[in-house]
Length: 386
Image 1 (cartoon, one colour):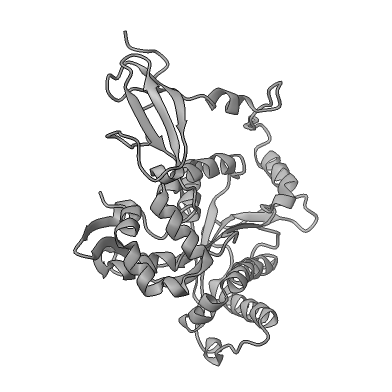
Image 2: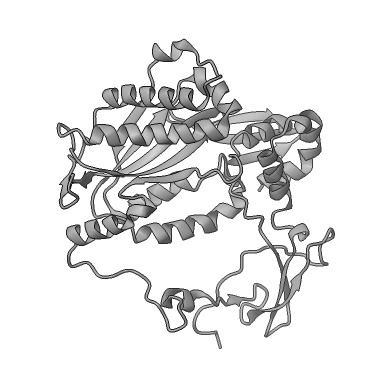
């Protein structure tokens, strides 16, 4: 199966010849990291079977947030942390989209306007939710920035996930929202437009914004999510820890062209797009965010500084719920961490022995003499076969 890293290694020189002089620093970093991910360039380690002496080489990952290979572990870690914060209430999913007239300005001022886009979406939502005609309380918001369509086109928008309810003004009572309604989206769209333009003009006083944005409808979408706990968690992770395209969607790499599949949201069917390799890489890198930019942000009682309120809400909604927090061990760590820190893996050759770490590989240009470079190893069961 073709991968993003394979495309970068095979056609990267063509892309550099075409766009190398105009590449942003964050694009250069992602470009190099994805090329070197899980190769000898980043080093690795060697494991040996204690039964048949088979050697298994595994190379380190780049850990770049734009790398499709490195998102799986991050998603599992994020899910584990958010599991402790999930409230036993329905959730709402909202999407705030900017009109196309502002996309070029967003691309030219990414760090400033991306942050304003997230802030305007969350503040307008929180402002309308405090209206006693709708909710009349203080809500919590998890917001994540996306910049792509399924066809990898540039389309900045914000996804927000909101518990269906809020805290009263005095912080003592939980005010539940209706199951199918949070706030009116038409009014929310107008407030969102005013908030964004006010913040953007204040942050960029020398920039001229097109007047047509005031005659254009700013699309805001809202719907309830599934109520079951695990579905909500998966839903959150799917929208927060996702790169522009995964390796599974790449169909073929041949003759300098890349074919990939995407789902057409209007026709509700899967389609295939084929692009020259340089154009494909260019589309992919356009969605690499500036260095240290936080694409996931928390507001209201979900903000890190208000986590004590989140604990109070959970206790009020589930007064008899068991304590799911990992307990501390004598050495200061948690029992969960201590139990899962050491992993054992079955030998893929004999399926009997256990792979034991024997040495580390320093970063180098040439790979060790081995046939398998897979990092994924099958975990051994608690009982070894006789």
